[in-house]
Length: 366
Image (cartoon, rainbow, N blue to C red):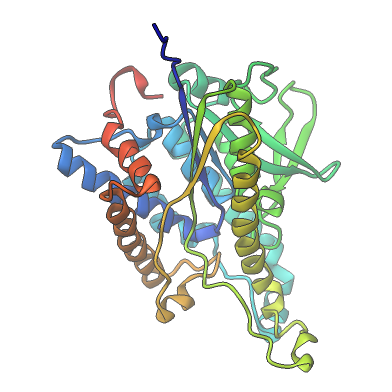
C-alpha cells in the first residue's frame, strides 16, 4: 500500500511600499473581501488569518500590521483619508522656486507629519506589541527598515522562525510602522527605544532596500517550512505609474534637478525596478530550494493617463484618494476575472484564499 505524503501549504502576503498609494492596496483587498462576503453570504472576513506570514514595506507595513491584527480594511482606508493630509502637511516640492520657499521649514513639517502618523497609528494599534500579536494571532510578521547607526538592513519580526531569539518582541506595532515608513525627505527618521531598555535606535524607510518585500517573505517561508512543502507568496503593489522612459537622443541623458523633478522621480524608478527584479529573483530562487514555490502578483490594469497626477507618494487631496480607491476597486476585478478560470493557477490560488478565509471575531482578535 502506498502511503500518501502530506504536503503542507504556507501562504505569505507581501505588500509593496508607495506612500499615500497604500490606500489603493487597502481598497483593492477590501473590494475582494466584500465580493467574497457576498458570494459566501457572510460578513467580516478576516483575510489576515489566511496567511502564515505577512510582510509589508513602508505604507505596506501599515496595512500588514492592520491585517495581522484583524483590523477591518474600511478602518485602514479611513486612516488614509482622514489622517493623510496631516501626515503629509505639504508635498515635497518638485520645482526650484517652491523648494526655496519650503527649505527653511521642511524639518518642522516632517516633525508635524511624524507626530500625526504616530497618533493615528496609536489610535488603531492601541499599544499592541510584536509579542502581543504573535501570542494572540500566531501570524508571522516581517517588516523591513534601515537602522541608521550602521546603515544596515533590519527586519522587525515575530518569533515565527525556529531559531528566533525574539529580538523585536517589545517593539509596539506603532514603532514598527514608524520605522518602516520613515522615508527620507518625506518624513522624519524614527527614534525608538531600544528593545532591551537601554538607549535608543533610529530607523529610516525599509523601501530603501526592500520596497518589494517578496525576498523577505520567501526567505522566512523557507525557514518556516521543510522540503516538499508548498509555498505560495501573494504580492500586492501600490499602483505605481507606468514605468519606462523613452530617451530619444543622447542630449537627453544629462538630466538635472528639474528633469528629475528635484529627485521625486527617482523614487518611482526605484519602486518599479524593485518590483520587477525582486519578483523575478524570487521565482528563480524558488526553482532550487526543494519546495513547490509559487509567486503570485495580484493583477492590475494599466492606470489611465488622467490618474498620473494622483500618484505622488505624498499626494493627499480628496480627489486623488478617491481616484486611487476607485482604481483599487477596478483592479480587484482583474483578480476576480482570473480567479474564475479553472486553467489559471494564480487565479485559483487567489480564489482559495478568499473563499476559505475565516470570519473575524472571537479569540482571534488582538
